[in-house]
Length: 293
Ligand code: TXA
Ligand code: MG
Image (tube, rainbow, N blue to C red; front, side, top):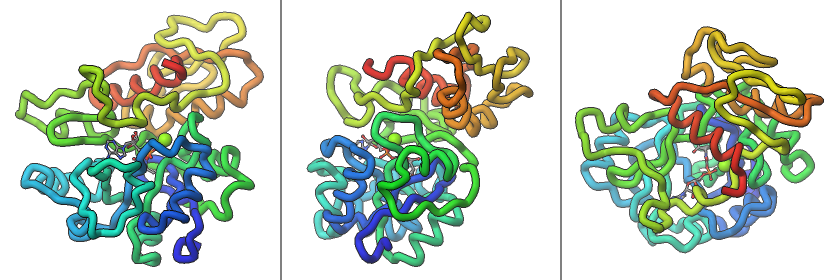
């Protein structure tokens, strides 16, 4: 299906992606059409290894160092694109940079190997809705609009990759700034629209939004709310009864899907600590609570 220019949903270690040949504009247009995604929002390209990535983008020594330490894994690097690599300009949305990553998942790696092509893959959900961490989530969001979902169970990390450009974290994710730049104190995560300049266009969009209102830092359940708990603060659901933030990240989107499907008209979430991957969890929750902000 990929070689014929189609889209296939496939799990990665972060979330399910909707993959297509990154060198074929018609195939990439199929991703945008299935998601209903604004075409100015560039896509992440997945490759099997660093050598394949270096054929598509220009690495400096700092980028190569990060790639060697964290690939395969949930790290996306934004780098100058090589025009001769033949990546569709629909993938980069006309930017002279490209977002690249080497996924750490057997299904996505097998698909990359079988296709022999770089694969553009945004999260496999309708634009603006909650990211999918299970094949059922994809089927619910995009069923009927895509021909195939490769089901390899729930995704282990559960939150989209950390996006880095130079020393700047453009999107928090499973790897924290401390993981990436330990000891390098000038590297701090900051919003991608700092100083009014857009560096990750997708970050300004409404994302991860459930269909219901979502209240954060809830001390208790109010009438009409489905409460998502964490640690000792229980609820209708609990992201991690033992207070493990990595487990909470893996469960986050599934919990939001369950809350959306519940009969209650609103959702509340207890406070989630901001350390480590908690920063990425809180980033996604803030976007879900303020989908138009
Ligand atoms: O974990 C992930 O990263 C998942 C899985 C499927 O790999 N993919 C994913 O892709 O989250 P997507 O398309 O939903 O998110 C792409 C993000 C957007 O925020 C987009 O604006 C940003 O990457 N992006 C892409 N190319 C960029 C570029 N050249 N410069 C800055 N940001 C870029
Ligand atoms: Mg997405």
